[in-house]
Length: 447
Ligand code: MEV
Image (tube, rainbow, N blue to C red; front, top):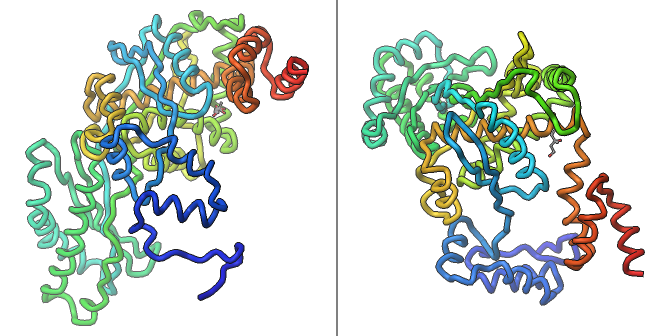
Protein backbone atom coordinates (compact mmCIF):
# COMPACT_ATOMS: atom_id res chain seq x y z
CA UNK A 1 0.00 0.00 0.00
CA UNK A 2 1.11 3.53 -0.77
CA UNK A 3 2.59 5.48 2.16
CA UNK A 4 1.25 8.99 2.29
CA UNK A 5 3.45 11.99 2.86
CA UNK A 6 1.93 13.10 6.15
CA UNK A 7 3.94 10.88 8.44
CA UNK A 8 3.03 7.44 7.26
CA UNK A 9 -0.71 7.80 7.71
CA UNK A 10 -2.86 5.31 5.83
CA UNK A 11 -6.34 5.88 4.43
CA UNK A 12 -9.09 3.92 6.12
CA UNK A 13 -11.67 1.58 4.58
CA UNK A 14 -15.12 1.53 6.15
CA UNK A 15 -14.75 4.46 8.56
CA UNK A 16 -18.52 4.94 8.45
CA UNK A 17 -19.04 1.38 9.70
CA UNK A 18 -17.05 1.91 12.90
CA UNK A 19 -18.98 2.61 16.10
CA UNK A 20 -18.82 6.15 17.42
CA UNK A 21 -16.21 5.09 19.96
CA UNK A 22 -14.31 3.32 17.18
CA UNK A 23 -14.33 6.46 15.04
CA UNK A 24 -13.02 8.54 17.95
CA UNK A 25 -10.30 5.99 18.65
CA UNK A 26 -9.19 5.95 15.03
CA UNK A 27 -9.28 9.73 14.63
CA UNK A 28 -7.42 10.51 17.82
CA UNK A 29 -4.86 7.73 17.35
CA UNK A 30 -4.21 8.60 13.72
CA UNK A 31 -4.17 12.38 13.92
CA UNK A 32 -3.80 13.35 17.57
CA UNK A 33 -1.32 10.83 18.99
CA UNK A 34 -4.13 9.26 21.02
CA UNK A 35 -4.28 12.38 23.21
CA UNK A 36 -6.91 11.58 25.90
CA UNK A 37 -7.69 15.30 26.31
CA UNK A 38 -8.91 15.42 22.73
CA UNK A 39 -11.24 12.49 23.40
CA UNK A 40 -12.58 14.30 26.45
CA UNK A 41 -13.31 17.42 24.40
CA UNK A 42 -15.38 15.42 21.93
CA UNK A 43 -17.33 13.63 24.66
CA UNK A 44 -17.86 16.80 26.66
CA UNK A 45 -20.21 17.94 23.89
CA UNK A 46 -22.31 14.80 23.84
CA UNK A 47 -25.84 15.34 25.03
CA UNK A 48 -26.49 13.64 28.36
CA UNK A 49 -29.91 12.55 27.11
CA UNK A 50 -29.26 9.54 24.88
CA UNK A 51 -32.31 10.02 22.68
CA UNK A 52 -31.40 13.65 21.95
CA UNK A 53 -27.84 12.63 21.15
CA UNK A 54 -29.02 9.88 18.81
CA UNK A 55 -31.27 12.37 17.02
CA UNK A 56 -28.30 14.68 16.42
CA UNK A 57 -26.06 11.82 15.34
CA UNK A 58 -28.62 10.84 12.74
CA UNK A 59 -28.95 14.33 11.24
CA UNK A 60 -25.63 13.71 9.53
CA UNK A 61 -23.04 11.01 8.93
CA UNK A 62 -19.83 9.95 10.68
CA UNK A 63 -20.82 12.08 13.67
CA UNK A 64 -18.50 11.98 16.67
CA UNK A 65 -19.73 15.00 18.63
CA UNK A 66 -21.92 18.09 18.45
CA UNK A 67 -20.70 21.50 17.40
CA UNK A 68 -22.33 24.17 19.56
CA UNK A 69 -23.38 27.54 18.29
CA UNK A 70 -24.65 30.27 20.62
CA UNK A 71 -28.43 30.67 20.39
CA UNK A 72 -29.54 34.21 21.21
CA UNK A 73 -32.69 36.30 21.09
CA UNK A 74 -33.16 39.73 19.53
CA UNK A 75 -36.40 41.14 20.97
CA UNK A 76 -38.64 44.09 20.03
CA UNK A 77 -39.03 43.48 16.31
CA UNK A 78 -42.26 45.10 15.11
CA UNK A 79 -42.97 43.47 11.75
CA UNK A 80 -46.19 44.23 9.88
CA UNK A 81 -47.81 45.25 13.16
CA UNK A 82 -46.79 42.12 15.10
CA UNK A 83 -44.16 42.04 17.80
CA UNK A 84 -41.52 39.32 17.45
CA UNK A 85 -38.46 38.12 19.34
CA UNK A 86 -36.06 36.70 16.75
CA UNK A 87 -34.09 33.51 17.46
CA UNK A 88 -30.51 33.87 16.19
CA UNK A 89 -27.89 31.11 15.99
CA UNK A 90 -24.60 32.88 15.40
CA UNK A 91 -21.09 32.81 16.81
CA UNK A 92 -20.05 36.36 15.88
CA UNK A 93 -20.15 38.81 18.76
CA UNK A 94 -22.32 41.88 18.28
CA UNK A 95 -24.74 40.43 15.66
CA UNK A 96 -27.57 39.84 18.16
CA UNK A 97 -26.85 43.11 19.96
CA UNK A 98 -26.89 45.00 16.65
CA UNK A 99 -30.20 43.40 15.63
CA UNK A 100 -31.75 44.25 19.00
CA UNK A 101 -30.56 47.84 18.76
CA UNK A 102 -31.98 48.28 15.26
CA UNK A 103 -35.29 46.68 16.31
CA UNK A 104 -35.61 49.11 19.20
CA UNK A 105 -34.73 52.07 16.99
CA UNK A 106 -37.61 51.28 14.60
CA UNK A 107 -40.08 50.16 17.27
CA UNK A 108 -41.58 53.61 17.86
CA UNK A 109 -41.35 54.57 14.17
CA UNK A 110 -43.90 52.06 12.86
CA UNK A 111 -41.51 49.11 12.74
CA UNK A 112 -40.74 47.08 9.62
CA UNK A 113 -43.16 46.58 6.72
CA UNK A 114 -42.83 43.65 4.34
CA UNK A 115 -44.30 42.57 1.01
CA UNK A 116 -44.01 39.13 -0.55
CA UNK A 117 -43.30 39.93 -4.20
CA UNK A 118 -43.34 36.34 -5.51
CA UNK A 119 -42.77 32.76 -4.30
CA UNK A 120 -41.78 30.93 -7.46
CA UNK A 121 -38.99 28.32 -7.25
CA UNK A 122 -37.07 26.93 -10.18
CA UNK A 123 -35.41 23.77 -11.42
CA UNK A 124 -33.98 22.41 -14.65
CA UNK A 125 -33.46 19.27 -16.64
CA UNK A 126 -30.24 20.00 -18.50
CA UNK A 127 -29.86 17.98 -21.69
CA UNK A 128 -27.79 17.69 -24.82
CA UNK A 129 -29.19 16.57 -28.15
CA UNK A 130 -27.84 16.87 -31.66
CA UNK A 131 -31.11 17.85 -33.31
CA UNK A 132 -32.69 20.99 -34.74
CA UNK A 133 -34.18 23.28 -32.07
CA UNK A 134 -37.48 23.63 -33.95
CA UNK A 135 -38.01 19.84 -33.83
CA UNK A 136 -37.52 19.74 -30.09
CA UNK A 137 -39.78 22.75 -29.65
CA UNK A 138 -42.48 21.09 -31.75
CA UNK A 139 -42.29 17.93 -29.68
CA UNK A 140 -42.32 19.98 -26.47
CA UNK A 141 -45.38 22.03 -27.46
CA UNK A 142 -47.47 19.22 -28.89
CA UNK A 143 -46.61 16.25 -26.73
CA UNK A 144 -43.82 16.49 -24.20
CA UNK A 145 -45.07 19.33 -21.98
CA UNK A 146 -48.41 17.58 -21.40
CA UNK A 147 -46.60 14.31 -20.62
CA UNK A 148 -44.26 15.99 -18.14
CA UNK A 149 -47.28 17.19 -16.16
CA UNK A 150 -49.02 13.80 -16.48
CA UNK A 151 -46.01 11.69 -15.50
CA UNK A 152 -45.41 13.74 -12.36
CA UNK A 153 -49.03 13.62 -11.19
CA UNK A 154 -48.32 11.04 -8.48
CA UNK A 155 -45.37 13.10 -7.17
CA UNK A 156 -47.28 16.39 -7.21
CA UNK A 157 -50.60 15.06 -5.82
CA UNK A 158 -50.08 16.10 -2.18
CA UNK A 159 -48.51 19.41 -3.12
CA UNK A 160 -51.42 20.18 -5.45
CA UNK A 161 -53.84 19.38 -2.62
CA UNK A 162 -52.00 22.00 -0.54
CA UNK A 163 -52.41 24.54 -3.36
CA UNK A 164 -48.92 24.21 -4.84
CA UNK A 165 -47.29 22.12 -7.55
CA UNK A 166 -45.65 22.69 -10.91
CA UNK A 167 -46.57 26.16 -12.18
CA UNK A 168 -45.09 26.02 -15.66
CA UNK A 169 -42.54 24.20 -17.80
CA UNK A 170 -40.61 25.84 -20.64
CA UNK A 171 -38.15 24.58 -23.18
CA UNK A 172 -35.07 26.80 -23.29
CA UNK A 173 -32.66 26.76 -26.22
CA UNK A 174 -29.15 27.34 -24.81
CA UNK A 175 -27.26 26.32 -27.95
CA UNK A 176 -25.79 29.83 -28.27
CA UNK A 177 -23.90 29.22 -25.01
CA UNK A 178 -23.06 25.53 -25.42
CA UNK A 179 -23.52 23.42 -28.58
CA UNK A 180 -26.66 21.22 -28.49
CA UNK A 181 -27.58 22.31 -24.96
CA UNK A 182 -31.26 22.65 -24.02
CA UNK A 183 -33.17 22.92 -20.76
CA UNK A 184 -36.55 22.02 -19.43
CA UNK A 185 -37.02 24.92 -17.05
CA UNK A 186 -39.80 24.42 -14.52
CA UNK A 187 -41.27 26.74 -11.93
CA UNK A 188 -42.83 25.45 -8.72
CA UNK A 189 -44.97 26.59 -5.85
CA UNK A 190 -43.88 24.54 -2.85
CA UNK A 191 -46.16 26.22 -0.29
CA UNK A 192 -44.69 26.03 3.23
CA UNK A 193 -41.84 23.69 2.36
CA UNK A 194 -38.48 24.65 0.91
CA UNK A 195 -39.33 21.97 -1.61
CA UNK A 196 -35.90 20.71 -2.61
CA UNK A 197 -36.87 17.02 -2.54
CA UNK A 198 -40.19 17.69 -4.23
CA UNK A 199 -38.58 19.72 -7.02
CA UNK A 200 -35.75 17.25 -7.58
CA UNK A 201 -38.16 14.30 -7.71
CA UNK A 202 -40.26 16.07 -10.33
CA UNK A 203 -37.16 16.93 -12.34
CA UNK A 204 -35.82 13.37 -12.26
CA UNK A 205 -39.14 12.23 -13.66
CA UNK A 206 -38.82 14.93 -16.36
CA UNK A 207 -35.48 13.41 -17.34
CA UNK A 208 -37.06 9.96 -17.76
CA UNK A 209 -40.13 11.28 -19.60
CA UNK A 210 -37.91 13.29 -21.94
CA UNK A 211 -35.90 10.20 -22.86
CA UNK A 212 -38.99 8.03 -23.38
CA UNK A 213 -40.80 10.66 -25.45
CA UNK A 214 -37.86 11.36 -27.74
CA UNK A 215 -37.14 7.70 -28.14
CA UNK A 216 -40.77 6.95 -29.12
CA UNK A 217 -41.07 9.96 -31.47
CA UNK A 218 -41.15 9.39 -35.22
CA UNK A 219 -39.88 12.91 -35.87
CA UNK A 220 -36.34 12.11 -34.71
CA UNK A 221 -33.80 9.99 -36.55
CA UNK A 222 -32.06 7.11 -34.77
CA UNK A 223 -28.87 9.19 -34.70
CA UNK A 224 -30.65 12.13 -33.08
CA UNK A 225 -32.27 9.84 -30.54
CA UNK A 226 -28.94 8.28 -29.68
CA UNK A 227 -27.35 11.70 -29.21
CA UNK A 228 -29.73 12.59 -26.35
CA UNK A 229 -27.96 12.86 -23.00
CA UNK A 230 -29.85 13.98 -19.92
CA UNK A 231 -26.91 15.54 -18.12
CA UNK A 232 -28.68 16.35 -14.85
CA UNK A 233 -31.96 17.19 -13.19
CA UNK A 234 -31.65 19.65 -10.32
CA UNK A 235 -33.34 22.58 -8.63
CA UNK A 236 -31.73 25.98 -8.88
CA UNK A 237 -30.76 27.73 -5.67
CA UNK A 238 -31.05 30.97 -7.62
CA UNK A 239 -34.65 32.02 -7.07
CA UNK A 240 -34.97 35.65 -8.19
CA UNK A 241 -38.75 35.17 -8.32
CA UNK A 242 -39.01 33.95 -4.74
CA UNK A 243 -38.54 37.35 -3.24
CA UNK A 244 -39.61 39.52 -0.33
CA UNK A 245 -39.24 43.24 0.33
CA UNK A 246 -38.72 44.62 3.84
CA UNK A 247 -38.59 48.33 4.51
CA UNK A 248 -38.49 51.04 7.13
CA UNK A 249 -39.19 54.75 6.81
CA UNK A 250 -39.46 57.84 8.97
CA UNK A 251 -39.09 61.58 8.82
CA UNK A 252 -35.44 62.55 8.55
CA UNK A 253 -35.83 64.73 11.63
CA UNK A 254 -36.66 61.58 13.64
CA UNK A 255 -33.30 59.95 12.87
CA UNK A 256 -31.91 60.77 16.28
CA UNK A 257 -28.74 58.83 17.01
CA UNK A 258 -27.08 58.53 20.41
CA UNK A 259 -23.78 59.65 18.86
CA UNK A 260 -25.28 63.15 18.76
CA UNK A 261 -24.96 63.43 14.97
CA UNK A 262 -27.57 65.76 13.45
CA UNK A 263 -30.43 63.83 11.73
CA UNK A 264 -29.80 65.50 8.34
CA UNK A 265 -26.11 64.62 8.46
CA UNK A 266 -26.93 61.08 9.57
CA UNK A 267 -29.42 60.63 6.68
CA UNK A 268 -26.93 62.04 4.16
CA UNK A 269 -24.02 59.90 5.33
CA UNK A 270 -26.18 56.79 5.60
CA UNK A 271 -27.46 57.23 2.05
CA UNK A 272 -23.88 57.79 0.81
CA UNK A 273 -22.86 54.54 2.49
CA UNK A 274 -25.66 52.65 0.71
CA UNK A 275 -24.82 54.30 -2.62
CA UNK A 276 -21.17 53.34 -2.23
CA UNK A 277 -22.26 49.70 -1.72
CA UNK A 278 -24.47 50.02 -4.83
CA UNK A 279 -21.61 51.13 -7.05
CA UNK A 280 -18.51 49.53 -5.49
CA UNK A 281 -18.29 45.72 -5.37
CA UNK A 282 -15.52 45.73 -2.72
CA UNK A 283 -17.81 47.55 -0.33
CA UNK A 284 -20.94 45.71 -1.54
CA UNK A 285 -19.42 42.37 -0.52
CA UNK A 286 -18.87 43.48 3.08
CA UNK A 287 -22.19 45.34 3.14
CA UNK A 288 -24.06 42.21 1.99
CA UNK A 289 -22.02 40.01 4.33
CA UNK A 290 -23.37 42.14 7.17
CA UNK A 291 -26.92 41.66 5.85
CA UNK A 292 -26.38 37.90 5.75
CA UNK A 293 -25.15 38.01 9.39
CA UNK A 294 -28.77 38.76 10.25
CA UNK A 295 -30.39 36.50 7.66
CA UNK A 296 -28.25 33.41 8.28
CA UNK A 297 -28.57 33.55 12.06
CA UNK A 298 -32.36 33.20 11.76
CA UNK A 299 -32.08 30.77 8.83
CA UNK A 300 -29.96 28.45 11.00
CA UNK A 301 -32.15 28.88 14.09
CA UNK A 302 -35.20 27.88 12.01
CA UNK A 303 -33.49 24.80 10.54
CA UNK A 304 -33.07 26.14 7.03
CA UNK A 305 -30.15 25.84 4.63
CA UNK A 306 -27.89 28.87 4.95
CA UNK A 307 -25.65 27.78 2.05
CA UNK A 308 -28.65 27.99 -0.25
CA UNK A 309 -29.77 31.39 1.04
CA UNK A 310 -26.21 32.75 0.79
CA UNK A 311 -25.75 31.48 -2.78
CA UNK A 312 -29.06 32.96 -3.86
CA UNK A 313 -28.53 36.35 -2.24
CA UNK A 314 -25.10 36.84 -3.81
CA UNK A 315 -26.19 35.64 -7.25
CA UNK A 316 -29.07 38.14 -7.06
CA UNK A 317 -26.70 40.91 -5.95
CA UNK A 318 -24.71 40.27 -9.14
CA UNK A 319 -27.71 39.97 -11.49
CA UNK A 320 -26.86 43.13 -13.47
CA UNK A 321 -23.39 41.74 -14.21
CA UNK A 322 -21.86 43.93 -11.50
CA UNK A 323 -22.03 42.86 -7.85
CA UNK A 324 -24.05 45.41 -5.88
CA UNK A 325 -25.90 46.16 -2.65
CA UNK A 326 -29.00 44.22 -1.62
CA UNK A 327 -30.33 47.26 0.25
CA UNK A 328 -31.31 50.70 -1.04
CA UNK A 329 -32.05 54.08 0.49
CA UNK A 330 -33.77 57.31 -0.47
CA UNK A 331 -33.97 60.60 1.41
CA UNK A 332 -36.57 62.50 -0.64
CA UNK A 333 -39.02 65.14 0.62
CA UNK A 334 -37.77 64.93 4.18
CA UNK A 335 -38.43 61.18 4.38
CA UNK A 336 -35.78 58.53 5.01
CA UNK A 337 -36.62 55.21 3.35
CA UNK A 338 -34.47 52.10 3.56
CA UNK A 339 -35.31 48.71 2.07
CA UNK A 340 -34.11 45.32 0.95
CA UNK A 341 -35.30 43.00 -1.79
CA UNK A 342 -34.22 39.57 -0.65
CA UNK A 343 -34.66 36.48 -2.82
CA UNK A 344 -34.87 33.58 -0.40
CA UNK A 345 -36.24 30.06 -0.56
CA UNK A 346 -36.98 28.57 2.86
CA UNK A 347 -39.45 26.21 4.51
CA UNK A 348 -41.30 25.80 7.77
CA UNK A 349 -42.27 22.16 7.21
CA UNK A 350 -40.08 19.20 6.29
CA UNK A 351 -36.32 19.00 6.73
CA UNK A 352 -35.15 19.68 10.29
CA UNK A 353 -38.26 21.69 11.19
CA UNK A 354 -40.07 18.88 12.96
CA UNK A 355 -36.97 17.16 14.26
CA UNK A 356 -34.47 19.53 15.80
CA UNK A 357 -35.73 20.55 19.26
CA UNK A 358 -34.33 24.08 19.01
CA UNK A 359 -35.75 24.54 15.54
CA UNK A 360 -39.16 23.56 16.92
CA UNK A 361 -38.60 26.11 19.67
CA UNK A 362 -37.64 28.85 17.19
CA UNK A 363 -40.71 28.26 15.04
CA UNK A 364 -42.97 28.22 18.10
CA UNK A 365 -41.34 31.45 19.31
CA UNK A 366 -42.11 33.05 15.96
CA UNK A 367 -45.75 31.95 16.28
CA UNK A 368 -45.49 29.01 13.84
CA UNK A 369 -45.04 31.25 10.79
CA UNK A 370 -45.97 30.29 7.25
CA UNK A 371 -43.07 30.17 4.78
CA UNK A 372 -44.11 33.62 3.55
CA UNK A 373 -44.08 35.02 7.08
CA UNK A 374 -40.66 33.52 7.70
CA UNK A 375 -39.41 35.08 4.43
CA UNK A 376 -40.57 38.45 5.80
CA UNK A 377 -38.88 37.88 9.16
CA UNK A 378 -35.62 36.91 7.45
CA UNK A 379 -35.62 39.98 5.21
CA UNK A 380 -36.27 42.16 8.25
CA UNK A 381 -33.41 40.52 10.12
CA UNK A 382 -31.08 41.30 7.21
CA UNK A 383 -32.29 44.87 6.88
CA UNK A 384 -32.03 45.49 10.62
CA UNK A 385 -28.50 44.12 10.67
CA UNK A 386 -27.49 46.35 7.77
CA UNK A 387 -29.11 49.38 9.40
CA UNK A 388 -27.19 48.71 12.61
CA UNK A 389 -23.88 48.23 10.78
CA UNK A 390 -24.23 51.38 8.66
CA UNK A 391 -25.43 53.37 11.64
CA UNK A 392 -22.24 52.46 13.53
CA UNK A 393 -20.01 52.90 10.49
CA UNK A 394 -21.21 56.43 9.69
CA UNK A 395 -21.18 57.59 13.31
CA UNK A 396 -18.83 56.07 15.90
CA UNK A 397 -17.17 53.43 13.70
CA UNK A 398 -17.71 49.71 14.02
CA UNK A 399 -14.98 48.85 16.51
CA UNK A 400 -16.49 50.57 19.54
CA UNK A 401 -19.53 48.30 19.68
CA UNK A 402 -17.84 45.30 18.12
CA UNK A 403 -14.89 45.18 20.50
CA UNK A 404 -17.16 45.74 23.49
CA UNK A 405 -18.98 42.54 22.53
CA UNK A 406 -15.70 40.80 21.72
CA UNK A 407 -14.22 41.65 25.14
CA UNK A 408 -15.43 38.39 26.71
CA UNK A 409 -13.83 36.35 23.92
CA UNK A 410 -10.48 38.03 24.60
CA UNK A 411 -10.83 37.57 28.36
CA UNK A 412 -11.83 33.92 27.97
CA UNK A 413 -8.70 33.34 25.90
CA UNK A 414 -6.71 34.33 28.99
CA UNK A 415 -8.94 32.35 31.38
CA UNK A 416 -10.03 35.54 33.13
CA UNK A 417 -11.86 35.11 36.41
CA UNK A 418 -15.35 36.56 36.98
CA UNK A 419 -13.76 39.30 39.04
CA UNK A 420 -11.32 40.21 36.28
CA UNK A 421 -14.20 40.27 33.77
CA UNK A 422 -16.17 42.68 35.96
CA UNK A 423 -13.11 44.89 36.24
CA UNK A 424 -12.65 45.04 32.45
CA UNK A 425 -16.30 45.79 31.73
CA UNK A 426 -15.98 48.82 34.02
CA UNK A 427 -12.52 49.70 32.64
CA UNK A 428 -13.78 49.88 29.04
CA UNK A 429 -17.11 51.48 29.86
CA UNK A 430 -16.31 54.71 28.04
CA UNK A 431 -13.51 53.68 25.69
CA UNK A 432 -12.97 51.36 22.74
CA UNK A 433 -11.76 47.89 23.74
CA UNK A 434 -8.41 46.92 22.28
CA UNK A 435 -6.73 43.52 22.37
CA UNK A 436 -3.33 44.87 23.40
CA UNK A 437 -4.80 47.02 26.18
CA UNK A 438 -6.59 43.99 27.66
CA UNK A 439 -3.32 42.06 27.66
CA UNK A 440 -1.20 44.81 29.18
CA UNK A 441 -3.82 45.56 31.85
CA UNK A 442 -4.17 41.84 32.66
CA UNK A 443 -0.39 41.51 32.96
CA UNK A 444 -0.34 44.44 35.38
CA UNK A 445 -3.19 42.97 37.43
CA UNK A 446 -1.64 39.54 37.61
CA UNK A 447 1.80 40.92 38.31
C1 MEV B 1 -19.15 42.29 10.22
O1 MEV B 1 -19.46 40.93 10.38
C2 MEV B 1 -20.13 42.93 9.27
C3 MEV B 1 -19.83 44.38 8.89
O2 MEV B 1 -18.50 44.49 8.37
C4 MEV B 1 -20.84 44.76 7.86
C5 MEV B 1 -20.59 46.09 7.19
O3 MEV B 1 -19.46 46.55 7.13
O4 MEV B 1 -21.59 46.65 6.68
C6 MEV B 1 -19.89 45.27 10.09
